[in-house]
Amino acid sequence: MKIGIIGSGHVGGTLGARWAQLGHEVTFSSRNPNSEVMKQLVARAGGKASAATPADVARDNETLLLATPWQAAREVLASLGDLTGKPSST
Image 1 (cartoon, rainbow, N blue to C red):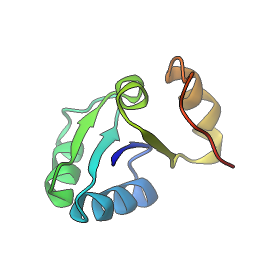
Image 2: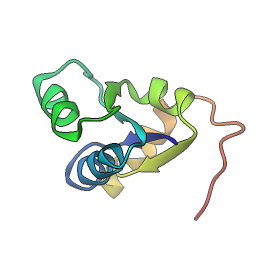
Image 3: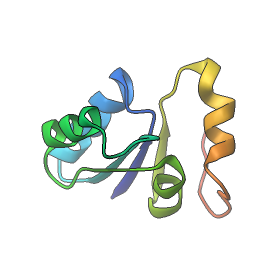
Image 4: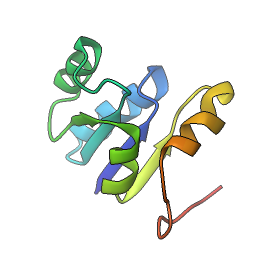
């Protein structure tokens, strides 16, 4: 499964790393996907983990996990672009 993680802090980083270790293709989002922090997260996750911008993560993955602080959620969701066709669940 291709999983995109929007918000790569404690929750998103931990869940994404575990899913990558279980064999899923995981892409972590970051405004700066080439930062040292993201490189370390991708290395720790191993497997098929990578990093990309939030809009790229939203576009290129089957499933998205929104793991941002509540205060940032509106801004992050607005930055993802068109989510038409992405299944949603609440």
